[in-house]
Length: 294
Image 1 (cartoon, helix red, strand yellow):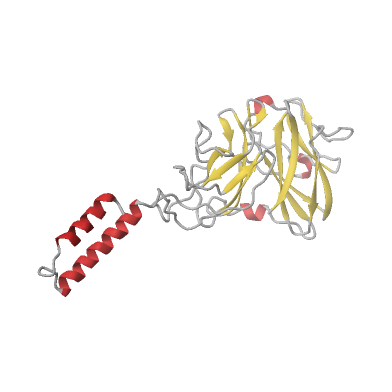
Image 2 (cartoon, helix red, strand yellow; image 1 turned 90 degrees about the vertical axis):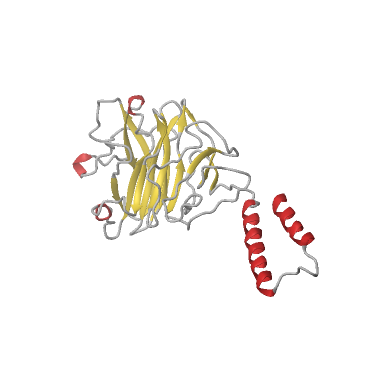
């Protein structure tokens, strides 16, 4: 209880005598007033606790970002932007190259029903200059949204290419285009570093020592941030890698080409399942691949 509320209550008690004790009706009114004052005092003494809307959407984050040619290091993500001692990250200490578990961020203080957000901070810090302290999605997340968002290098600091897996942002035809062929699995690429094209060669995804190219109806050169390229593959373990060529010089195939050192990874594919293949890194510190099922 606030000091002034305590003084008011004490004054009411001190001024009462047996002679002027209130009637039962007056006492009920006083009890009601005191109850409301106590409730207000509890709210004022809540330590800045946040009032959230319900969990909204299903979001996961891949930390693939670099700044000044170096990985940004581990990050925390919160669903509130005014941090205090009660604030706990929804995604904690997410290291470079890691993909988070799914989280459902909540709408901000006193805005129940509004879109939710995720705010980016360096791990262990609750303050920071841009891009830290900012939200990673300008639109906010709705109830039916499911998204995988990559933190990637950008000429503006950090970019946020994403794959929308469900929700209002996904065009009606998109899910049809991701149909998994019978008896196979589907690889869907998400290139995190495409927002800095001037510093990159042309990138090709190598699968088991070959590069499926445009004549097979799957171009391996994304045309925009977050663009998708789909590869149908047989169930089993597949080796992924990156092959490059100088900008402006495409490849007809990968015959005789060797993947960029450090770029290879494996993915275990099950029939009927989709997988996101992350392409990230910079030529200065090595291009890389990794994958996650969805």
